[in-house]
Amino acid sequence: MARSARIAVVVSHDDAPYKEALAGFQKSVERSGVKAGYHLHFLQGDAGRARAALERVRQQGADVVFAIGSLAAQTAGRGLPETPIVAGLVLNADDLGGAGNATGVFLELPAETEFVWLKRFLPGQKNVGVLHSRARSPVWIRAAAQAAKAAGLTLHARSVESPTEIPDALESLGSRADVLWGVPDSVVITPQTAKPILLFSLRNRIPFVGLSRSWVRAGALYALDRDYADIGEQCGGMAVRILRGTPVSAIPPEPARKVVYAVNLKTARHMKLNIPEPLVRGAVEIVE
Image 1 (tube, rainbow, N blue to C red):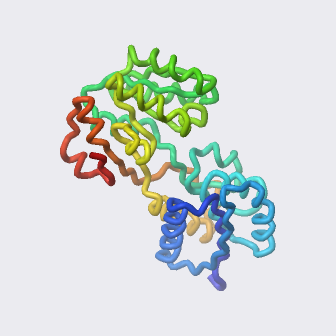
Image 2 (cartoon, helix red, strand yellow):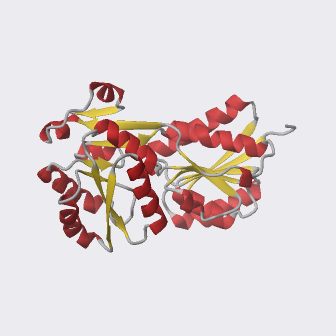
Image 3 (cartoon, rainbow, N blue to C red):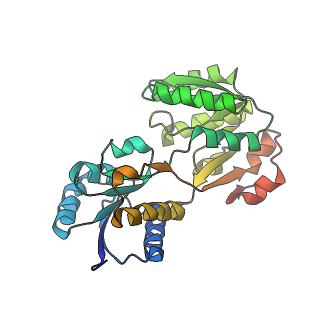
């Protein structure tokens, strides 16, 4: 490559996971041998900064954009329709908005992966309850139910329209579910709903599978999480392929390839659950 590749990095926030993803991305690109120059644009969670950031990207020029976080991905997707975009730390492929010039690595894990781990942690549990908003696609619900069935589990899904319906929905699931599975959902899973969900779980001794390490610290039995630096490396590999001539359309979005997890042994003791020792040793965080 005669000149350094121009890579614009648009970052939703400057929190640790975003920085880890950026470091992993740069490591991957450097390891590939591609010479790259970077222009960084931080949105600080403020959509109002988007217009100025996009204008700077256009002025500076970019061979590829690395968008970190949903705000950055949506901003780049709307404003840079001709520039290849690789997105990381987005919730799911829907965050790419169907843009033909965008690909990336999303955070939401496949239901199949979730159920493989659930059976490792809770081999005796067969009935899985899940709350979701009505915005959740019926296609996703059917696919999750099929994945549960293939794993020897039964999925009991209950939809809610607002957080005020969550207590009644939990009571309904409580009579059928051995375990509650938390999935990313802007109605069901919020800082305001965490307390009632976890209190229900602890009071009824129905383990809750959280969405991140912070949920485990708050009382979830365990949670699968992501290695953010590795997501950056995964995105870096995509960017290198684009820089070497592969069309974005030939690189489909994919889930994070590396799964880590945290476990709460205090919750396990309260629920009289025995977490296999190899799982405890493999945790990136243990709450005792």
